[in-house]
Length: 175
Ligand code: IMP
Ligand code: MG
Image 1 (tube, rainbow, N blue to C red):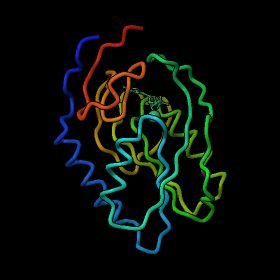
Image 2: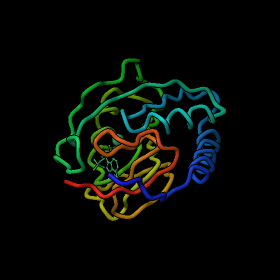
Image 3: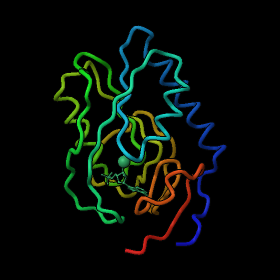
Image 4: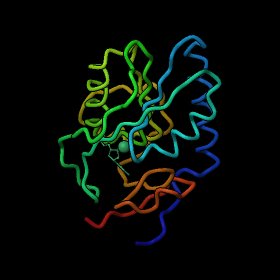
């Protein structure tokens, strides 16, 4: 596979993540019990950077779902692979996703987490492919809108490759 072509540079990502962290820190109070729920695996780098830039108290949980195989074709159904471990009842939950494509995963996660009876559930995603939306799901804190292309880097993969690139780049899927 050829090297990904830069779509969003490391500097653009860092600036945007800092701006999102500032907004989130402003909009939640110091007394809110904010739980960041990172969606594995793709959100791990975004979550690490975002969480360290927040200036309000926060705790971290992870959740894992699977909706895609090793390639880029959606299987449609979303399956819970690992639930949050901590108790999130009456806490403010912020789902931290790498990318919103069709929206099925995020919609499923909102419903799933709401069943734990948190005080609120909001969503944060680094990237969204607006034109690919199949379900109506709102992203409260969004990094970037991109077109219909497969992206890797900053946590995102294609067949598990390129997650640790510091930038977001475009690759051509082969399946
Ligand atoms: P959705 O349910 O269609 O919104 O799919 C969301 C999930 O698909 C994301 O959390 C990613 O794991 C994966 N995904 C969708 N598009 C891309 C991409 O361009 N690069 C890497 N992963 C992607
Ligand atoms: Mg994901």
